[in-house]
Length: 333
Image 1 (tube, one colour):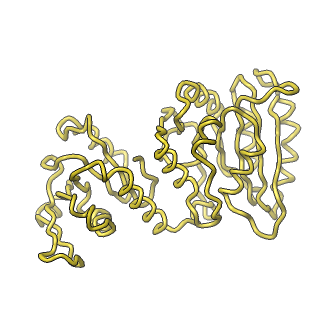
Image 2: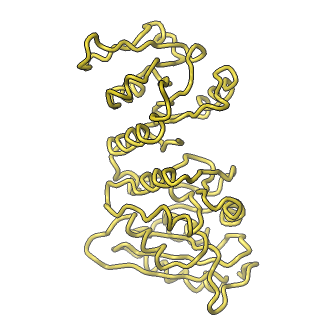
């Protein structure tokens, strides 16, 4: 198979580097590498693989695919180590980036599959917005959907190398926002994200994710607001309220919800509070609440998002910042 784009010649740097960390991925690598081969991108491309102490047949599979990829014009760069233990996803991504040379970085996990148009469409978008990270349909902070310029990564990165249990993608995302970056989406399905019991994502405790989210919410969004409303009078909303510092809790003017049973109670009393009298926060119907809002839900479904969007005029949201804090999906601050 010959790619439409010309391969990078001697001394010519590839335009896009696909960044692929690998650890014990033999079950999925064939599909993953096939999806790299099938990209319809017209420009020059390389695949930068870093093997993080795999003990299975991952490297045999990669070497099997190497001539197919290179015959199609895709340069393949392979690095790695054979230590007794892996160094972690953050380290592997940093090493794969360091050994690559493309002007743009396309992140891919070894258990995922790209659609053929992914690199082409995200490169077209990224060329117009050099300080943005691009994702596809789905949760914002799913690292293998990201695409950005090398120059922007160099300004924001590198990834945290703390290893297992560290949400390196979330920490990078927050640093990206601190640097003034934006998150834009190519509004198409560009990647098949595989969720399975051995996924590295599952090594990160939910409580770790929650703590990072609350800290960043208090750092990045809440200082801009004199007051705000928590959108959820249930378990997750109350958990957020309790997780806030006392100064941030003082800014909460209400909870809002659509559940009549919760609204009928009228207020939430924080029993563990040291203040006297104990805080009693009103619980309102969402139509009676005022922005800005922190959306705090177990899972922000399409239905819930559509409800918020359909009521945006009523809620005066056009010029309001809305933060979200979700327990099972990444936040779209």
